[in-house]
Image (cartoon, rainbow, N blue to C red; front, top):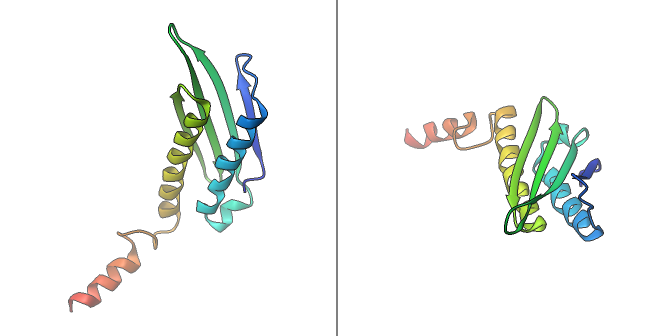
Length: 123
């Protein structure tokens, strides 16, 4: 679990306990996708804002994940706060996977080891 998660409401939006627990659970479990060196220093900031539209209420969730050498940002709007948190979680997960392949070129389909193994299969 990511230990440093700061959850705040914007424009006088009060975050209830259920939303706070849900956000901590889902954003906190993203550390299992991080490389070992990044797990120690990762911190997250989640900002939830209620946007009052003409017909209905919408919620905007923005999550900022600070890891070594990079800051990952994901933002989404939805009519439900929990749904927006789920979408932001999925966006951050894909960004973390890209970060891992940038930092460690041995991971992925186009990695050095994969090309090396394919060259032996052909010949």
